[in-house]
Image 1 (cartoon, rainbow, N blue to C red):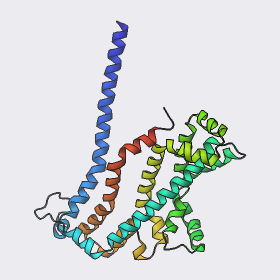
Image 2: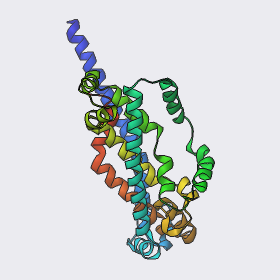
Image 3: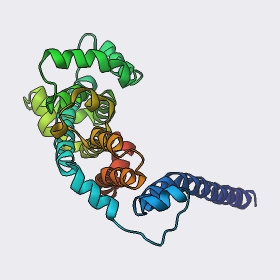
Image 4: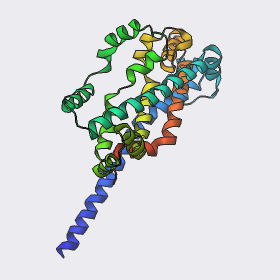
Length: 283
C-alpha cells in the first residue's frame, strides 16, 4: 500500500512540476517573442500610421516598402558579407585555438597547469568592455585597424570555449589516451586523430555560440571598423539609425534583416546546441 501511495505522490508531483515548467516556459516565450513580432509588424506599416498610432498592431496598408528602401539605400549586402566572413573566420580560429588549449589542460600534466586553468576561468568574470582599450592599442600598433583580423584575432582564445573543450576532453576515457601513447602517437596526433573526432557536440556548440556572438558584436567593430565598406551588420544598423532618424519602419526593417540569419542558424542547429551543452564526455 505504501509503495502504491509513494508512486501516486511521485506521479502527482511530477505532473505538477511539468505543468509549472510549461507555464514558466510559455511566459518567457511570450516575453521574448512579442518584441520580435512588434518589430516585424512595425516594419510593415507606413511611417504616418506609426507616428499616429505607435502602439497599434493593425494597419490597412501593410507593405514591404521599408525593406526596399533599406536594401536600395544602404550597402546592407556588403555588411552581410563582412559579417559572414568575420564570423566564419572567428569560428574556425576559436575552435582551433580553444580546443588545443582545452586538450592541453585536460589531458596533459605540466608545471603551472592549475594556474593557467584558474587564469582561463578568471577570464569568464572580466567584462569584455574593460579589455576594449588595451586591445584597441594592441591592434592599432599592429596596423590592423579596418581589417578582418582586427575582429578575428582578439576573439580566438575565448575563455568559455576553452572551458567547454576542457570539460569535454576531461570526460574522455583515459584508456584511449594511454593506448595511443603506447602506440607511439604524439600529443598532437592524439589530439587530432583520437580526441577531436569524438568532441563533435562540443565543436558544434562552440561554433554556434561563437558565430552568434561575432555576428551580434557591436562595441568592438564600432571601435576598429570605420570604413563603411568594412562594417558589419550591427555597426551598419547604427549608421542606418543615425541616418534615418525617426523613420521607425526602416529602423525595424534593418533590425529584422540583421537578425534573420541568426534565426536560420538556430533553426538548423538547435539540436547541436543542446547536445554540446549537455554532453561533457562519452556516455
